[in-house]
Image 1 (cartoon, one colour):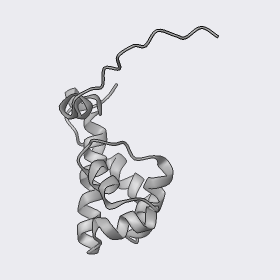
Image 2: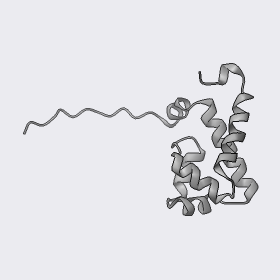
Image 3: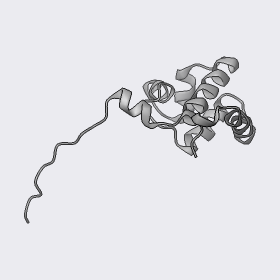
Length: 104
């Protein structure tokens, strides 16, 4: 079997990765962090609820890793928030973003 030529993988820097996420995603993370702090829940407690390491939560909160829909659901549960209520509030918050900041 022939070997494929190896290619170097160009991985984005942390700054490049952050910029690829939309302003809406940044707002989502901001609201998640605010809700976590308001509930008095630590990153460690979120991580246990997700079945992941605390570093995973930190990476998510710092826009270095995206949150899956399942993790969002578990995150909301961990902070005592109904996900549909969180999303409704998030949608209202997105509508308040300046038009130039919204993804279209």
